[in-house]
Amino acid sequence: MICPVTSPPRVKWPRKFDLFGVQVSATSYDEAEEAIIEAANQHVPAVVSHNDVRALIDASRDDGLREAANSFEIVAPDGQPVRWALNACHRTRLPSSVTGTELMLRLCRRAAREGLSIYLYGSTPKVSAALQAELTRRWPELKVAGVDCPPFRPLSSDEDDAAVRKINESGASLVFLGLGYPKQDRFAFAHRESIRAVQLCVGAAFDFISGQKKRAPRWMQRRGLEWLFRLLQEPRRLGYRYLVNNTLFLGKLAAALLVRAPRPVNPSNNQQ
Image (cartoon, rainbow, N blue to C red; front, side, top):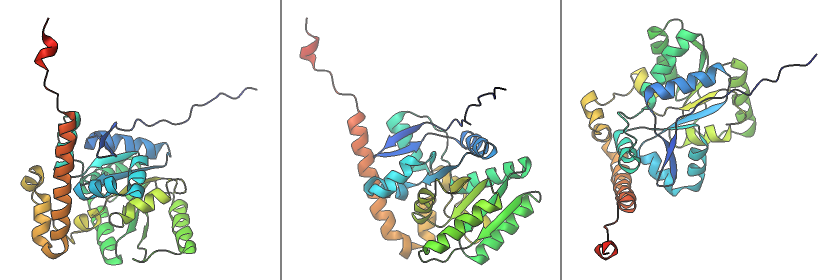
């Protein structure tokens, strides 16, 4: 008896474009959601991250973070400035950014509908409990396979192995990482072959969805002013970071646009 040859599962991931040496996905919420759910249903391990201005600048200057980002299946444009940069440099015509908070909510809704289980890894017990309560309030049928709040110090080898084993044994299809940037990206990269699920680096989504922190109003989000809203909330912590990263971003974007600008035609070359 000849067994039929089955082709390996395939997922159509969004196309990536270079921004300052970092491969960023030109994607929308709908496209990203479909690819991630397809991977989850086919049990295809993958990593999804979200790059705002800070993450993009950090990855452009740090070899390790850049290697990690460029290996991920999706690096979504988190924040309007990154979307604007993709549109300006590559004419991608993206209609909106793709934030970790909104994508997490969409994926939890789909997971509840399709019977996929999720795993929450990160933050504090208080935030994680509030997050789980809010998600199951919105979608009572959502399966939360596990919740883990690791210590804020580096894990020992045994602790790390135990965390991975716990995630895999839970059977979760979607693992949401709320460890903060860049820790969550480094964790996902280190475990991209050992965790048998789609890992999603969603940053402050744990705080926003659980109600621990406020998001900027929609009108500020649409105009790329979410950073200003957060700055007004935490000026001491974020002031210097935004000053440095926003300045570097504008400089790198100007340089990229200058390289891509069409060169003027030399009139002498057109003489017959």
